Amino acid sequence: MIPLQAAIMGLVAAGALAVVLTRDLVRLTMASSFYALLLVVLFLVFQAPDVALSELVVGAVGFPLVIVVAIVLQRGG
Amino acid sequence: MTRQTRIGLFAVSAAGLAALLLWAVAGLPDFGHYRGPYGKVLNSVAVGERHATNVVAAVTFDYRGFDTLGEEFILFASVMGVALLLRHERGERERLTTRIHSDAVRLGGAGFAAGLLALGLYVVAHGYLTPGGGFQGGVVLASAFALVYLAGDYRSYRALAPIPAIDFAEGAGAGGYAVVGVVSLLLGSAFLHNFGPLGTTGTLASAGSIPFLNIASALEVSAAFLLLFTEFLEELAVTPGDG
Image (tube, rainbow over all chains, first blue to last red):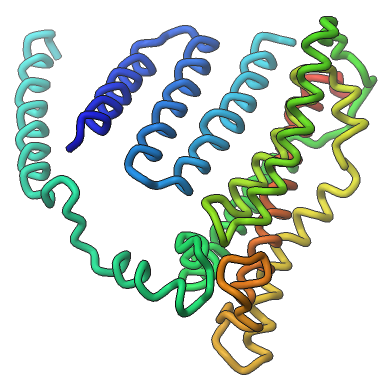
């Protein structure tokens, strides 16, 4: 394992811990989309650009947008 | 159950789980030593057989094209489910008055949205040449319209997004993928078998029927995500009707 691969795996592990430990819903949405960005870098480092693109569009765009709307609706507009 | 027995039960099961996990990890192949021969075979034959320089696209739209058909319909069915649940009689429009007032944000957002639209079209069009393709490009296309809402307001989103065409585009994309498969059958080969001239490797006119499947899935995915955004934003924008 080269240092770059080890570094990004460590960052992903830290990001996953941050997602699990976040309690506030809005912060959780931001933490999980940031975690998705870390995964994008991980896939890129391991030379899987197609998977990185899919993770980017779903994890950092589609998922947070739907969750944010759901949070707003649940709080009553 | 007392606290002590619960902790004891947890300790025993956690230790068992940890032991099983360690056992499984110890049995994994060494780092970087992938054992499946399938990927290596495809990497060496795909460019010659299909004239597609992105082997991932050759797998998703050709060698494993049938799997992608299933995935298309999973997305189609789940987005239809969202539309069925959320679409109801709508009352007064324009409840959502929140809009971005900063001219800089609106202008920057419009610029980014235009760039995203161009990027999405690029990622779709070159799907079988470089990383990307119908799925990734389709979501980028839909997110360009989402950005119009985020940096502007709901009215501009409704004005710019092709709302009346979305339902049709989603059905046409999902159905079009299956139609390409049926064309293969009519030409006398297996369902979704690659047909058509393979063209020059590395140019847009290559890879046989992969470009058709690529465009069909781009249509399906971009319409599905736009429909999802529209239905969710409509929930925010419109007060429920009496019906």
